[in-house]
Image (cartoon, rainbow, N blue to C red; front, side, top):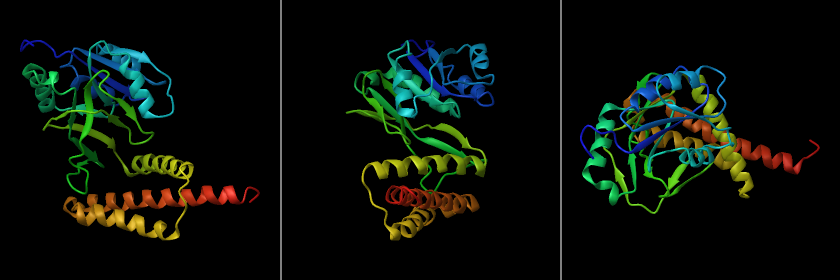
Length: 261
């Protein structure tokens, strides 16, 4: 690939009502040959902003989970290679440079997939410890190399091999505590539903021990304390997430056993 040519890559951005973030996301993806915004029903200015920045906009109703939407988004890509982003993610200039080099090097012939670390900006700070960095995300691949699976924490499943980039995506999803709590409240509900559907029983000791284990794992074993109060707060919130997950599992068993209660 010539040095001045854009790599044969479609950047797919999942979005809904993201007018305050979509500009930065699209701008960071301009190094690629194509940018496609897959919109699931925005009622703000997301689609108009995206079109104004040169992105192609495709409207795709929300199917209920990210895996299905990502698999669907892949069908809208004109290029053989895709990079999947959320609207609150940004391709750093260093990662964009590394991706260009990836296509110029000939690596795609042997590595149909690539992952990169993700830099988490939480409550206004880059959180480097507590298991938050690096969290490698497999987001770039040749179409047909695998498929997405999972309702909440979706993952791209592929037989590989997988190349690893050294430079990160930047992720600014949790701008305040309310956003974090709302999102993890939804996650704990889905996790509890899946546990219940799989026949997992509620165990009282897990209601207390698992949240504590998760807190200590994040704060002590993964050295979350090095991020100051951010590290403490995030470890506590992760523990709360697991407390809610087990409490909601109990709730589902209780309602099944006491339908008239």
